[in-house]
Amino acid sequence: MTEQFSPEDIQKWHRYFAVECNNGAWQLSLDADRDERLYELLNLAHAAAYHWSKVGTELNHMRAKLLCAHIHAFCGMGATALDYANECFNFFTQRDTDGWELAFTYMIRAQAAHAAGNAALHASAYEAAQTMIDALESEEDKEIVMLTWVHIPQPL
Image 1: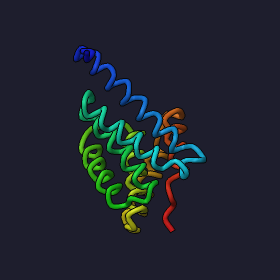
Image 2 (image 1 turned 120 degrees about the vertical axis):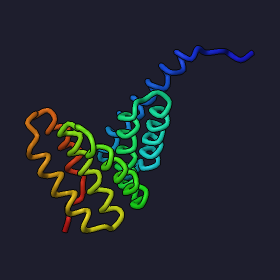
Image 3 (image 1 turned 90 degrees about the vertical axis):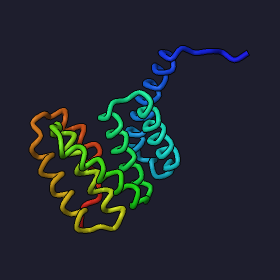
Image 4 (image 1 turned 90 degrees about the horizontal axis):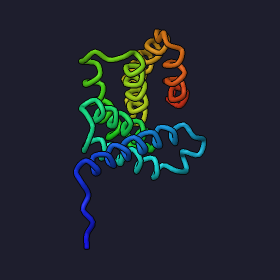
């Protein structure tokens, strides 16, 4: 006999796994052994995107795509990383967006451009990200952004 679950339970599980996979991917992307766990990073990022697609808002969906851009760039998948990053860039720069989130948008775009071999975009996005990070007023926001910023390749 198959157990039946309520739609509310299923929604609750999607939200739980969206948050867990999202946080797990971001945390693993900061860990020293991330290069040995790229497959796990990809799985976590795409699992987060899948679960957010079931229960999230448009903002959740775009944040999940930004995570996918970040992880694809880590994995050397430059073309898809840049596709995700450009879509997120268009979304976040065409609306009222907090400074920390714009900084993430530009730095992940820089990372994706680097992975895709687009030196000009890498340099311009990196410079814009640095400017936005410097302008952050909240020390807490700056500390969170800096955890990822130190992993973004600098232009030559």
